[in-house]
Amino acid sequence: MKALFNDTVLAESDQTEVVEENHYFPREDVNMNYFKKSDKEYTCPWKGEATYYNIDTGEDQMENGAWSYEDPKDAAKQITGYMCFDKSLVTE
Image 1 (cartoon, rainbow, N blue to C red):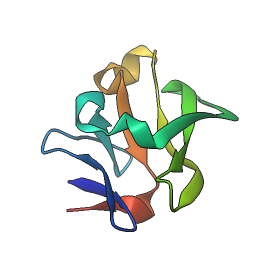
Image 2 (cartoon, helix red, strand yellow):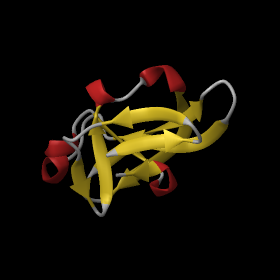
Image 3 (cartoon, helix red, strand yellow):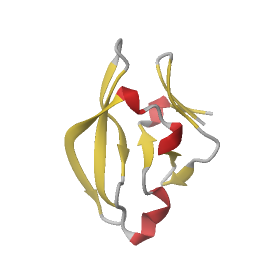
């Protein structure tokens, strides 16, 4: 799986975790140079508190285009430290 923003590869992995039809990428497979934490707040009833990120490739920007659960609830422990992307950015 890949996460692409226009021509920029944000993440690439064959070890994604699928939750609610979203692919979560291991942090080590994500190029964190393109991400800055956002002010957006959201708490999922079963996953916990999400951390959102704005994407900035230097040429293009997307607000809240990625998120993670740094300390998810027990039901979602498999995505601890993984990042998820807006579905429009994910391709096989």
